[in-house]
Length: 332
Image: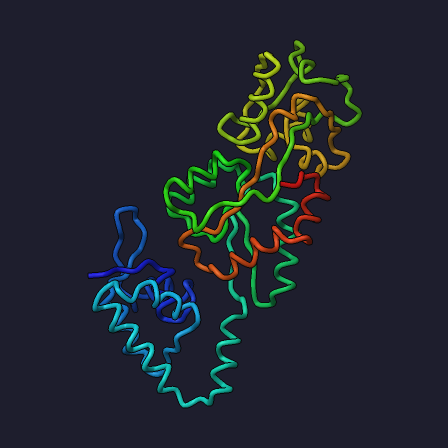
């Protein structure tokens, strides 16, 4: 017996993944759990539901694509697809109405869930608003945080459409588990900078200055891309630094300085820019040896795959790149 994940079931039925989830939650579609804990729906259950929908079931372009990839999956899938095709061909609408329906199905709608590195918060929030304006009926929701934590959430089954990481290493956590759709693409790069208190009262002028006795310095945790990059720069300089704390993402590290709980932090240039006059930035040459590439990818079980592709396209477009470079990111 063939089984289908939520996204595939939605494509076959010609409805959204959110609708399929509501049907499962409401008991109208019986679902099981696979070995990873994700919900799957048996083929016969989908066939029965398609039959009950009758003439209301219209096969979308997405469903037709899914049919081509799943048509050899088994008798249950064949029955479901036959039912869907019949209901489409038996529809009493005219040819022009059918064309209008196909055009309507191409229109983006629904929620796009983006998991993104904390350093992307300001830029991606701006791009999210732009996306919603360009595609009325859509909503972009973000989960910002340490790339390693976000990757762990994705491999643990958290529903999301897009993952934008602050390093290839943390992206590999997702791709190695087979949770990405396609190959991640680097869309920007980011470089480190020292964030000090306004006016730089401790006269910090180099990475070595952070090792001064009595200076309270904060770093990102070594498992987070900004922390790994900082450690790489320190190792290259043969410097040893004991911070007062390791933070789980770059925003948390910067906040320590903004609140005057630390004298300095090693963060990204983009975060210093975003903080405005709350901190002061100090460049250091070693940062050139620890530049992070930022990859982005659509996720394999994206609930809103078409909108996910469109959001990634915006990020990679000239408009998207302009927003990102103005925030201080480097071009890929």
